[in-house]
Length: 447
Image 1 (spheres, rainbow, N blue to C red):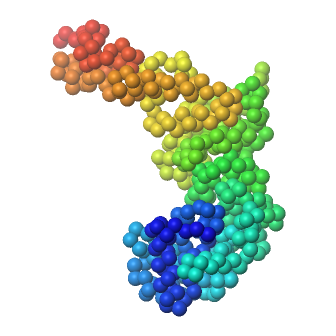
Image 2: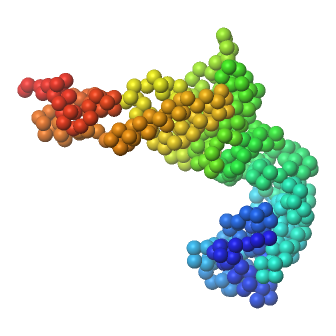
Image 3: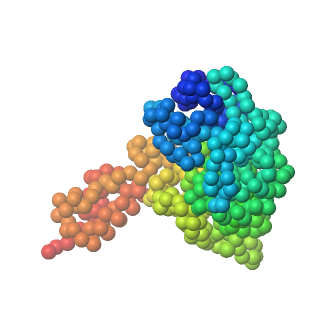
């Protein structure tokens, strides 16, 4: 197991363990950091588990925050680095599917037994270079198996968010979910409803912005979780599409393939917009001369807005997701758009997300990227024309017209809008041409 000793996070966590051991306490790195190191990945943060009681941890490391002193968790501050140090513990009964009603400080083995999955219950002593494995996590990791510790149903009852975490870990690390664990996932899937919307949203975002998001969607469906966290997406299953445009299959299959086609590390708003871009199809399905989904973009934007409110997205993120879905069919018309209309479209805020949604939408269906390439070519063409932005600033404004003798009011607003359209259509190119254009078409009114 290799650790980058130059990494400040690693160095800080090692110093914490060394100090605790010098004081006679057991202390180890624990959990995801050990799992990641065994997989050859550099950990982003390191958690420490120790026999030292929380008040002793606080006295040894005066710069600290008691983030969960009742549960034995102290956050040690070392410059900008924050390391959570937790006392070995056993948990009492869970009544809210999140927190134990009581904890008892205990041993490393007992501490390992209370954790969620075997691959997350590994302890490593960075001073002696020794791995402690009380649950068989190292072999499960070698065999690519995700296994709940002890009774899977009990682990999921303790914290129902572990249901979604199981999906994420299986997808991210290419793990096969052990049969008893998978059976418990399906049996207890409805208990995810006990978890707050914010915690569900964050776990879903980690699934859909991580590696293999399409596989994440499929696994959510297979385990029964999707019907409880995103019933509107579950409703896509079995909704047929016209084969000429969608040879890949139903709406659910298309959505999973679109997620598969995303470039790595998509923004949360883009990932969720791809997930929900066709959420309006089940409610707009019509069968006439062929299958049609008229105005599914409008219906989808409304449904997506409701989903985002339910999951407590910020207003800004909800607005972007809804806008991406509402506009995703506009790409059909890019070859027919007047230059002014096309410029405005290409100048949409965060247009790169609109473009990426269109790209994966095409790749997940007919595969024709002609409209996508046309947009890229036009962006380059507009940029070459005077090295100006896609949507250049107005050539003149109201102050210029007032100085030229025009009166403020509704007519001036109409003049400026018409001039802007002419500019974007390439009819005028300089302030001088713009002023001449105005004088020719809008002579000053005689008092």
